[in-house]
Length: 159
Image (cartoon, rainbow, N blue to C red; front, top):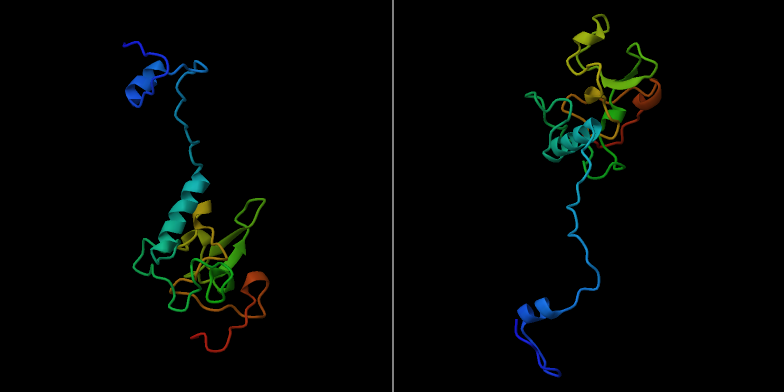
């Protein structure tokens, strides 16, 4: 390594890197490792990707996977329009647990066991979120029904 005379200006970065004193001896920084996603976080990401593609999270594997033509926009959860929360098929069910779960009962005749309904399982993957845009099977709920099914459609909504 060449000796540098005092008072000379050095512009060469290679020489500066070798001759610049280090303030602290530090080990190189370890790469930042992100924690693994939980099953719920992975499911939410998958459902958001399905919604962004214009399909409904409960029916995306079916030929009926499209959203209703008058469904509320995916990007705005507060916008008016057809959503699972105002559909007559969304029910909050107690499936033998200490808690109740929102499920879509489309295709249930009220007599068969709920296990036979195509959009219901005993897992969180088939929970029906009220803010989701309505699927192609969406029907407004009756105002006489309790909770989320209470709905009075707005005029001119394409009912």
